Image (cartoon, rainbow, N blue to C red; front, side, top):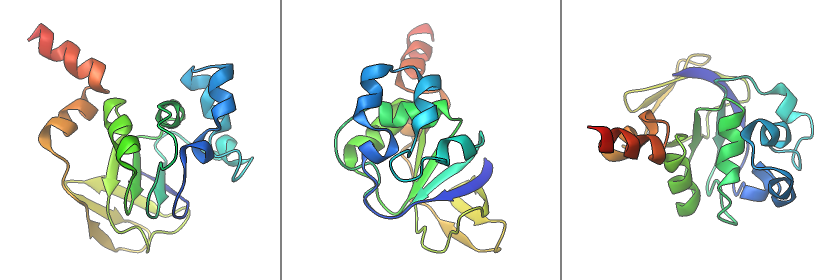
Length: 159
């Protein structure tokens, strides 16, 4: 998969991704996508393009266990988040909802860099640099490829 880097720092909590007041308004991904990162950058949501990657530092998705923090990103067409580390709950919510969590060294990635994620490697097409990712267990890849846990379970029960 290829896309543009949208860079954030360390400790991006779920309320930064989408504030908890928004989930009281709606849990529709198309509604929530309009408000991603509004507390950090009110213009961000309007600038997101399908296929963009969120790139962050350590502890991405910390804070509350709001599943809508994944739903909002998926609704915006974001297919992967690259970070040096994730909160355990966000990581599982991402997998369960079909969003690829990629653990790798993100320190050299800059806003707007063109990235390719494939085969356990992130290639920065802007700089020519590449980094190895932490491997994802096969079952987690299958869940993501099925669009999330519900799709995965439906495939397994029909097989």
